[in-house]
Length: 311
Ligand SMILES: [Zn+2]
Image (cartoon, rainbow, N blue to C red):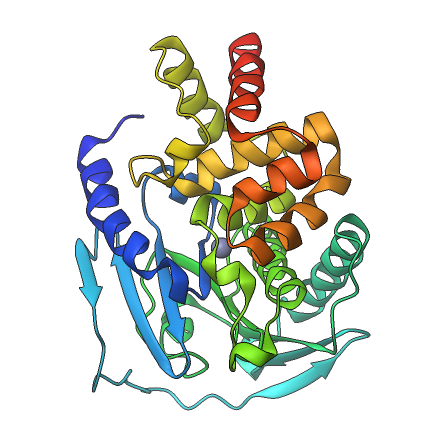
């Protein structure tokens, strides 16, 4: 469904994203459906400074600095730790229901992603689980405010994943998978010499980073992505890959479509090397030539051809 008002809000926010994308920690919307409706947000991180830009029906446009603003901690939570093979899972008694299944989901994602990205995640992974979205919004694990449309966050400083348990379970599974991709992105492109929390992933565009997280957590097919592709193909308005840097193109959906094409054409094995190559160069285009052997123009042409053939 086309909703011009939400599109305008996306456009407003997107400019904030462009300005902030170097500073990013990474939140995800809680579901592709929410993303499709434009209820999404992102949080930016630079050392101890976190800027937030939020958008959604309940938070029209609220970007800016949050100096001096503290989140209200209105409910003390008695956190406990569940240690699994690879995760330290923080939870509190009212979130107990769902912890075991979340732990299994997290371990399953980790095994898949380690294989797919050919990378063993460094150290143990922290996963902080909240029983509800209002509880999640008062987290002090990150600075800055969390919007109603944010389904989870991964912060690069200590690589912690923070999320509320969502209904249905499939949403929680998606968000754990999506956020864990960010944990891999931060770990694979870590630059400790550049300062705490510095990673090569932070300088890459959202469509590259978020699209990868969406592709790896959802797979190649998403009805909202398909709708956007179909509309653009029929109106002969397909963006080139370079165009995806423009805020007009919602990075989660167009980025997912980009990665679905790349992985479908060149194989999932290309994803890890593309990430590290792009992060080292500070540009996705370095990974097209370096890993795929094509330039941006050739890759865009092949992508468009595949979209037109499908729609
Ligand atoms: Zn994300």
